Amino acid sequence: MLFVADTAKEKIVEIKESGSVGQDYFVRVSVTSGGCSGLSYKMDFDNESQPNDQIFEDNGVKVVTDLKSFLYLCNSTLEFSGGLNGNGFHFTNPNAARTCGCGESFAI
Image (cartoon, rainbow, N blue to C red; front, side):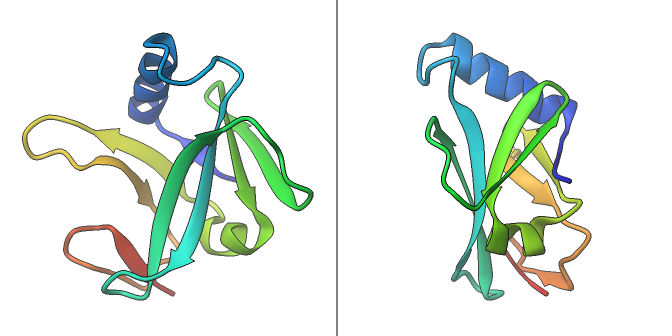
């Protein structure tokens, strides 16, 4: 399962209501190679499912990921923090053994 915190839900709803993306779009999350700890998170809005997508809905938000990324993201929570010291969307990932200082990458 992938989870969506209230703060992330509020920001996703705000983005959709602004017209930046269509109401039929969902959140696509994935893990890619890179970053100072070895793996990086990626988040986009998408409206096309792929054959091996894993689909979740939490807190009224549809979140989609590929099977390989799900192995790294299982039981993670998508969060959002704003303000001067906020870093936008980020994950709380119980699978990460270590993360970099900026929180953009992690290792298992």
